[in-house]
Image (cartoon, rainbow, N blue to C red; front, side):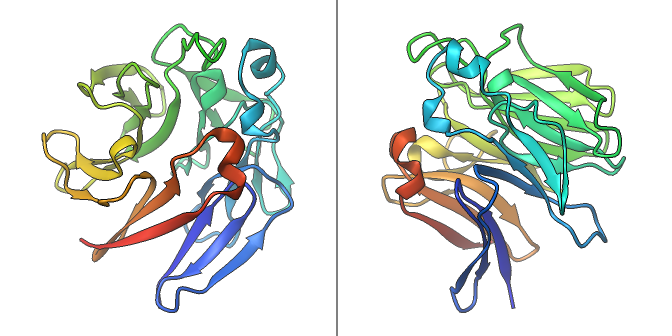
Length: 258
């Protein structure tokens, strides 16, 4: 039996990949973004935005957006995150969070709620200042391998980048532009060193070091959300639509033979 946990803006879903049955698990703390957990722990760690993402259009709305938080079971962290995206429970007991609206990576310890660590790849302090003036990097995805933290910068229409930080110090080691590719989500470094990401704008899965996609959906969809086992790769799909329509748009999971 194979299951997937899926975060949507309104729900946390449990998907049975054999029967295709979908069961809502949570709906009381939207918007949901990231899902992670500490090995051996029975409680999920979730990220929540606390706002309607479609309202984030200018500096005034972003300045009031720091209402996001992390939760673990019944424990809720401080509300200081702006539109947090992917999260990752690290081996040192802390949670790595893409504090996307604030244009930084924030490291949170739920046992020491008044302490956090943050770092970015540029001096921009907000993801955007208006719909036309996009100054931020839109940091949306993280992956930890040994003592290096890999971070995807979506880049809006400026081209995506892959940043590498030391962990746990968060010293910025490198920032690599990914050519004309933009709108990337997720980064997964395989045990062989292959660097795989969702090229969301073309509905594909790519090796960022290769010119051609590894896999293409063949449909005008937006790919984001990536998980893997030894046998399968799961890719999330959502409709290409405006932020104001995301709560009611269709979504799906592709199950790929690895």
